Image 1: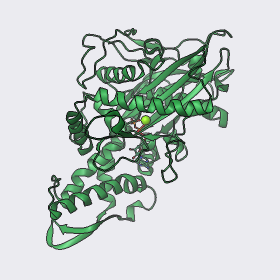
Image 2: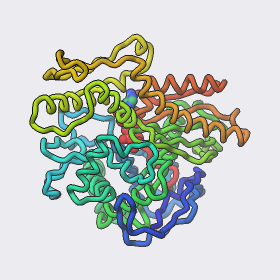
Image 3: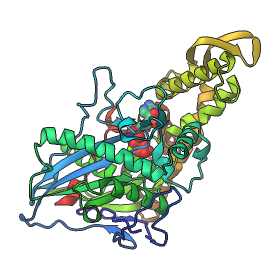
Image 4: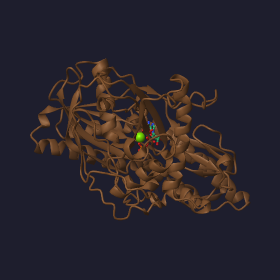
Length: 484
Ligand SMILES: Nc1ncnc2c1ncn2[C@@H]1O[C@H](COP(=O)(O)OP(=O)(O)OP(=O)(O)O)[C@@H](O)[C@H]1O
Ligand SMILES: [Mg+2]
C-alpha cells in the first residue's frame, strides 16, 4: 500500500523516513485491508515553495488529530494567494455534543466507542455520548494500529479489554479506528456546516483532509492508520487518493506552536534559531527539531533533525500503576457475583480512575515530596494483606509515584536528548533556543521538572517552554502554511 504523506508543507522541509512498501497492502497485522493502489513516493520529503498564484480552487482543509485518548478537528477555508499566516484556523468545539454536565476538554473529544453486542450502527456510542452500562467499551484503539510494540502495552488491561471486544464483535483494529474516524468526521461536518453553511455542497471548493500520525509509528502502523482513514472517507465526498494526507504529529505541533507564538510574541524566535518540539500525548511522545530560516514575510521552518517518537505517553503511567495497585489489593479477578470479589474489582476500577484523573495530574511540583496521595472507594473491602481489617482508601507516597513516573520520563528525555545530540553533530547546538512541550502529558509538573533538571545537568541553558495549561491539550495543527 502506498501512503501519501503531506508533501506540500510550504517552506517547511521535513523528511519522513518511510520507505513505502506495498508488498502486503491487503492485510495488516492489525487486520486492516485496503485494496486500492494509492500512490506514494518511496521516501517522503516535504518542502515545496509556495506558488504565488492567486488563481486555483478555494480549499477547505480539515485537520484531524486522532489521539490515543482524545481527538480534535480543526479546519480552514483557504483562498489562493492568502498569506499563510493570515489564514484563520478554526477548531471544531463539539458544542452540539457537549451537554451542560460534560467537561469541555478544550476542544478535544474522547477517543472512545461503546457498542452494544449486536454490533449494529444504531447501537454505537462514542465521544461525549453517554455510554449505557452493558456496552462493550473500546479505548486506546490508536495504539492497536502499531503491531511492533516493545513497550509491553499489549498486557495493559485497557488494551486487553479492547482486544477481547474486537474479537467478540468480529472487528479488526483498523475497522474499529475507521468506524471512529467516520463518526468523528460526520459530527465534525455538522459543526463545520453550522459555521460555514453548506460548505460541503458548494461547488468549486476542494476538500483536503490531513491526519496526523505519530513520528515513531512503524511503516505498518502508518499503513494501518492510512487504511482506516481511507476506508472512513470513502464515499464521503473526499477524493481520498488525492486529498487525504498524513502529517507527522510533531511537525504539526511545531507549525501550530511557532505560527501562534510568532503572532503573540514576535520575539519568541528569530531567524536561525532552532526549536525542539515535543508532543507528549496519551499514547505516544514525538519530537522534532526545526530551524527558523525566515521570519518575514512569513515564517519558514526547515527540519534539522528528523522526527522521532516512542510509546511512552501518559497512558503508560496508568499501565505502570496497575501492578502497584495489584500489589496492594491482589491480582485482577473476573467478577463472579461474589461480593468479596466484585467489591474488590469495583474498588480497583475506582482507584484506577482516581489515579488517572487526580493523582497523576497533581503529582509533581513543590509539595509533592511531603504529600501522600489518597484514593478512596465505597463500600470498604477486606484488606487482602490483613483479612481481619477493612479498607476504604489507599495511599501512595512520593517514592511510589516517582517509581511510576521516572522510567517514562527517562524515555521522553532520551527522545529529546537524541535530538540535542544530532544538533550537536550538525554544529547547531548553539542555535537551540527552546524546547517546547505540548500535549496533555506536557501539563505534568513532574515531567516538566524532570526535563528541566536533565537539561541543566547537560549544562544547557536552553529554555523549556510549556504551553499554558489546557492549551497543550488542543492543537489546531492545520499546516496552513503548506496549502496555498
Ligand atoms: N497533568 C498531567 N499529567 C500527566 N498526564 C496528563 C496530565 N494532563 C493530562 N494528561 C494525560 O494526557 C493525555 C491526553 O493528552 P493528549 O490529548 O495530548 O493525548 P492524545 O492526543 O490522546 O494521545 P496521542 O497524541 O499520544 O495519541 C491523557 O492520557 C491524560 O491522562
Ligand atoms: Mg495527540
